[in-house]
Length: 84
Image 1 (cartoon, rainbow, N blue to C red):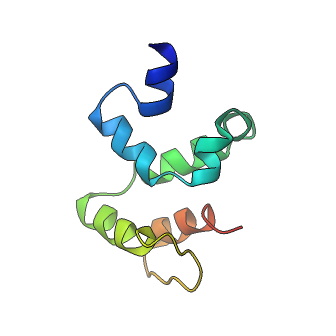
Image 2: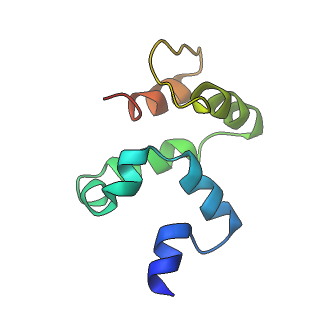
């Protein structure tokens, strides 16, 4: 059960947040927790309201992270986490 909750979240909100997380933060979760990247991403993501969440999801939903533009500074910072 501990593994399941860590992998998929404790509830639907956590599961949905994991779906939008950078893939490298999911696969290499321990490393990204230790180096602080996971927390930085999460803090930014949690600052999004409904309309900015939709804008953000529309930008990254195609799984292509180059040549994306937004005027929202929080989304711009989030996008950097998806670029290699």
